Image 1: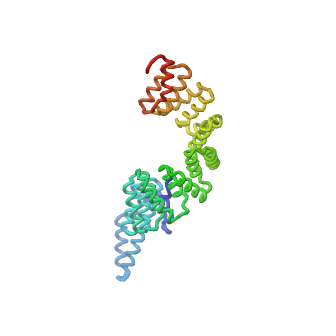
Image 2: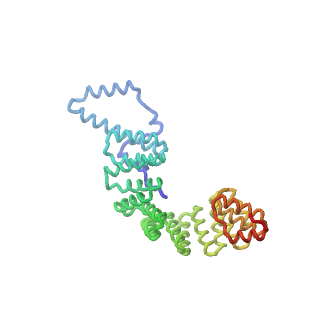
Image 3: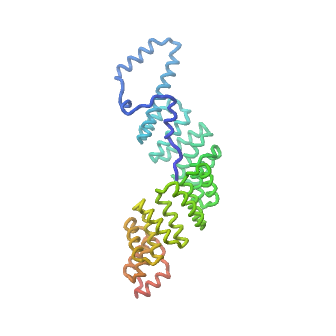
Length: 349
């Protein structure tokens, strides 16, 4: 899931306000001096200018709070940012952009209920706010409400059809729901808008993989790797495609890349082990399964695969150990393999 643009656009909203530096944030005039200046201003202002002075003071408070909010947001001090954004809302309760910004701060705190509330308020004030719909859709997905997420993404794209991030996110929602053709359309649109979008190529490749179109999937994964050669996930995805096609040497090459980028990638070790096993290198397969299990002891697939490898090495006791562990973790062991293991080991379990 890709996060659409959030409160980072706060800086763009300063509208000429002075951006406070860290040292300036800690610098305050003594309270007495501030009160004296305020009193002098009130005394000297003509009566007809008091309203104008109040408006100016309001504007100054708004700009100061906005500058502070932006500073705190970029420092990831989200509570402080929320406090300043709340000040702005108190000054102008119909400021849709500030509700949007505060929603993004709540999102970064993983306070999804408050984030949805603020994005909804931004939409209520400005029903044409495509970004607010997109962000609310993102939060709904985080909360496990895919139907509402899909609805919000679709509304966002009605308002702004050229938002590549929202196209990608809606494609991901269709993918999760098993709506593969619709997912391909959205990923393709994201790529059309932004041809350098490696995640859209990866997403579309995953859909073609799910459809069994491995050659097309490999083409998309290869394009994603050209754009971003540092994604362990995409190398894993392409390697798995090669493995499923029986091209084990190329699969091993990609799994090598994946674990070099991410040494804790247990699934890549598991799939590399399966590839080595397929070409008869059982010792290397066991080493890879060992590594996968060391990283994730609760991976039943690796335990099952290692049991097969131990069986082929006639190490039946260890094969049974892995079978029992895999069963405890909920995997269904192939009954044909169990029969072979029982017969070879001369034991029932």
